[in-house]
Length: 285
Image (cartoon, rainbow, N blue to C red; front, side, top):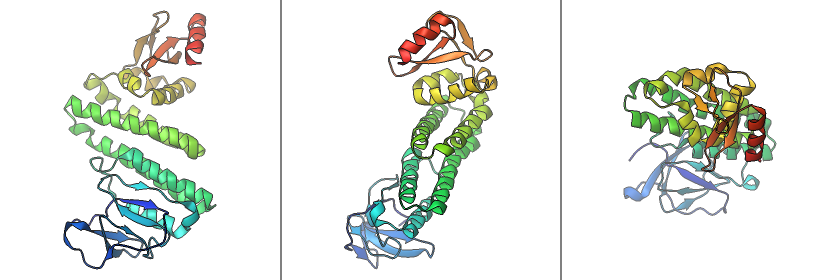
């Protein structure tokens, strides 16, 4: 049996304790390591367990999944329990994209942020925001370290697409929950793009093709480049496309463009001529 803590769904659903076992029996028993003092106990996969000091205000249910998800009723959870949940998430490190899905983990961390904010514990919300930063950094670091190993275009494309989609999820949730932290999160991915654009070009995957697959992220990132006149983020990444209205070439050397949502939910580009700006405004309404 693995010593790795199981993935638990935390629910504020009652205060009865069922299913705790002192000794594991067969495949149905799962070892759980909890809290700062590393308390160890066992639960059955099919059981809901409540009553340990660690989860004294929440219930546990083991799910057959490799994705941790955290859901807590703020009326039933105290600050110590939230801190212990963060320790549980830390126990899942190091980041392993094969068994840990970043968007759902981010969702869990943001859920904790909402509960801490509800409880008005500023020190804990700061801790959770830092945990959010570290979670994202883990994903970026993993991809950065392994880039030189990805010589197969299919694997590279899948990994790159994944991190862009994850970024899109993070942006949308951070905008809603952690307004002040969104710039820091966005900056991580901007730095990531700057650092690894050469790999994109080597594998013949122009930046714009990925942007079309993640339109919300495209709006955020390319609008950033436009607002800051950051031409370096565009030209080296192979960004070059004709204006869909007049045909004028839009390249990274002249990043005066407008992003327009396409019918297939992708992204199209228009230049900033008067007629094109008017058309873009109508399309984006």
